Length: 201
Image 1 (spheres, one colour):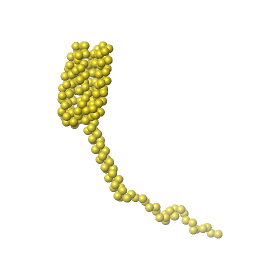
Image 2 (cartoon, helix red, strand yellow):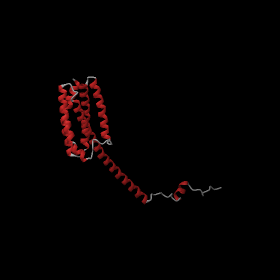
Image 3 (cartoon, helix red, strand yellow):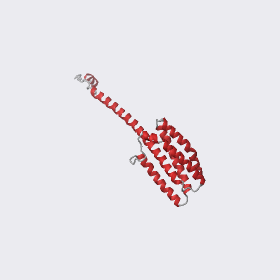
Image 4 (cartoon, helix red, strand yellow):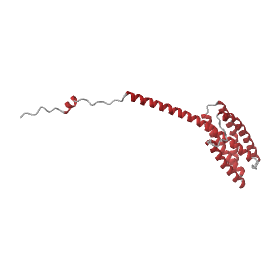
């Protein structure tokens, strides 16, 4: 009996079989996806740039509120300070803060920022911080350790202000505001050192 030659190898069958159709994306769908992706990228860029501008406004409000509150605290502290050296130092601080507060009025007006605005989260945060500071200073006065506590608190508050002004300086595009921040920081720097030395003594 002869072998059955009617059987073919599977390779041969694969070669003669109709190839499976390759699914391609509809060109309209492809262009729709590309267009949608471009719109998404544009929206993200617009959102990020607007958020950066808002951050600068919030930062300006925070710095201005901090300077304003520090000025108020330094004015109120003058009558409670016992040390003549610290009283003189505090008088100089009040003068620098008063000038900075005055100089920031125009940038605040340009950005439509009001330090009395209760809805501003930056202003509310600073107000809350300074209410707590007022409580600590009152406790120090009652416990007869006002001068040392005041010097320590001012050292910390001024160093924090320095950092905040540095961040605002980097994010701001206003030359006038940068000049105000630079002048204020330069005037505050020796006072921070003096408060720190008094605290250590």
